[in-house]
Length: 299
Image (cartoon, rainbow, N blue to C red; front, side, top):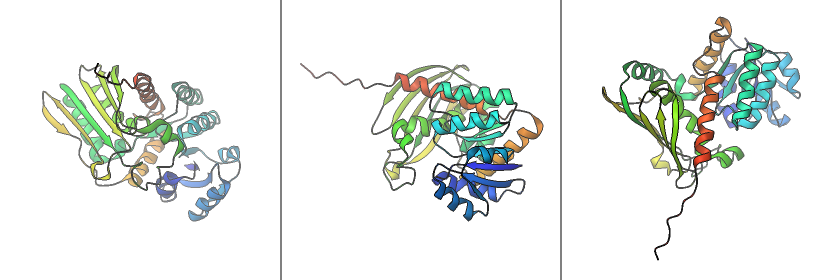
């Protein structure tokens, strides 16, 4: 499959470009970016072509991989789908529900495949665990803690304007939801959402399966406190999401495999744009409920 890359930032450099250039079933056609000099540098590093015009790239490919902020991604994904190009997208799908819905509708009309890269879902240990816990059922409650230190270290992602604006709810919240939804079922109600230290968000969810879950999400955790944990409790006892033996690069390679399979068979992948839209709807609902409620000063 001929794939072009949209985006030149740290994620594109660390994950997308190396995975595309090293994939046996992919012809890495070229790179387009909002900064032509960065596109040229990244393309040269991987022996491919830099495109100054996004439509010129779309004309030369079968699919696009997108490593751009969600508001930029949504517009370009709709444009690519309308041109008949398959979509390998990042989370969150879009910055608003309306823009996410446009991506889903464009992909549906054009009958193109879509896969959204929720990293954990493409790690073998996590994937097997999710399938096993979903099969067991009978879960009573769950807690997910996704704590990062992006804003408390020299992370290359710390200067990202959209992360500064949207915070952990929108950045790591999709990862937590991508694990919980296939196990506990869709969200029936966002029961509560609140702010914590820095960009920390606390969210309480009621699921259609009858379980509840709590999310603690942050990009401002102290480095020593960073990490991800998902714990389920129910009739089968207690189960915890296992650690993965590999990182984002290998996981993205599997996401490429998933796009190839979806395009070849016509069968939607579980992490397609429609699933990512549902995640966006839940995030938007939680965002609308968050508010600062100061404790009244004693008389």
